[in-house]
Length: 375
View 1 (spheres, rainbow, N blue to C red):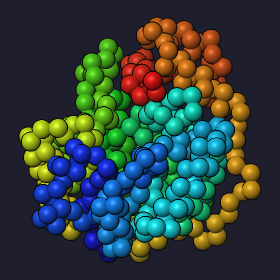
View 2 (tube, one colour; view 1 turned 120 degrees about the vertical axis):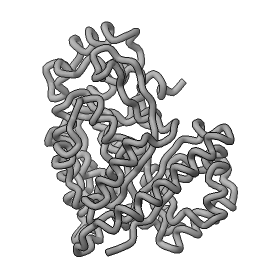
View 3 (tube, one colour; view 1 turned 135 degrees about the horizontal axis):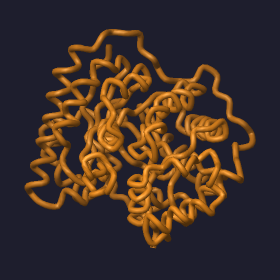
């Protein structure tokens, strides 16, 4: 059984690089996760950064994490084709152990600026997601996976999420990133029991785990009057470390555990020290919990016979609904206005089931869309 490696989410960001430098100097960082598409539009990237990425790649300890592909966009977009071409070029230069993408679709008119939000779980979205994953796998020619989403509108979505993820990755023999802070958000926001929720996830497909911090937002009607947000701007809560020790032994294919934090939350010496303490605490938790894992036959997570459809899967109705939802979330003056707009929209009475959305989660979606709206 392969050793579980302690990894950092390391991007070209002054905050994260400054906080991480002592960990690199002490050779504590066993693997890197790189959000490669954050640099697709960068005018200049210093060569030393590419040398760092290449070093980990040559040791089979580099993992790629996409952010902006927008897996479930109803229409195949030129930006997605360009994204795949750039990924293909990167994979010719660097060796990725695997490549992953976020679940959901991006808010914003072109779906390439914003935060990922939930989609309805239907045969249409399943077909689109499978099509896009096959194209990603064809571009990178290595294992591909999806990260579980923090955000949901209803408890029913949370219950169905794990099964839908398993159906999505099946044709490419893909894997799952189990983001434990995302899980923590759902446990709080919908008052779930941990073990009941874990039973709904395909833990045998988990190849990577994320841990991170987040924030609390006051929200009327939410459990405890607060919504947990996956904002990546603070230290890892103790509850997430407890989840890590609980989950590692349940994931026989686990290979990487990644600490994530945005550079915007790493602007002081104290925050740098806290970040390093979290990383070393994560390493200790891995060493402790990894001994409890049961051995199993390794899954290479590669498709046996990849098939790429000539024509990308699309659905114009879904695309129109996504545009309409994005517009409502980005422009509504508040919850009441958004609720009324949804009732008049094409999403009413549809597979989106907007009538069942928890009011405090719709309010959270408004905040997310406003924060990430491209100005």
